Length: 283
Image (cartoon, rainbow, N blue to C red; front, side):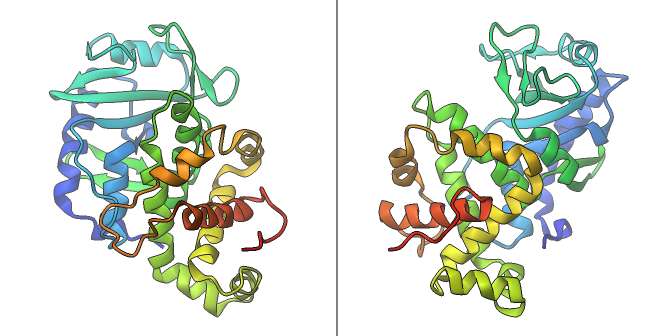
């Protein structure tokens, strides 16, 4: 579904510089242990898929690090200058960089507690998204990992749960962008109109194509998360669902609905794809 060679090469310059600097600080870190996440991940996926919506400026960058133990994380971060008070942000190549550890050091699964932090932090889905990720070849640093669009969406759903609890709603616009992308991807169109399963989804969703595309996104997210989908279902969308619909602005997408009620319908389609609802919600 996604050809990363179509990504604007300029978008690879910053992650290349930061990963090169990270690798120079650690003898244990390998490019294949590094997964780009966050805003730069979004922009790369956006560019590679030929989308116009979802571009926003950012001055930082985020990476997930698939690590076996805390010694590897500590050995890397102790050589870096901390930034702010999150205890996972460091200055790397003069760029504020979030380094999010995950993998075998999760205790319990989906949770990590970096030694410098007083509290644990959620990394729900990071391991599953990493296993489903694809290769992203950087100009100099080697080949790292990048989530699929559905994997990126999975991380954003989890991020919404974490941050909306503190009245931070920026993940809503990223969720909106991915929903919009899915409604425009040729592969999704072909699936819905050219396969028996896709046609069944269209019929079940009353021939509402954007909602059917949202349902395909939900199905793909569930395919990435596997058994962890039930953990998401237990909390989604949290106590601030109405804020989610209000904040779901898709920048650069003139046809994106402004109505919170319509945005809710798209979210409900995605939820059905995730298996959160057994039947179509009547409009």
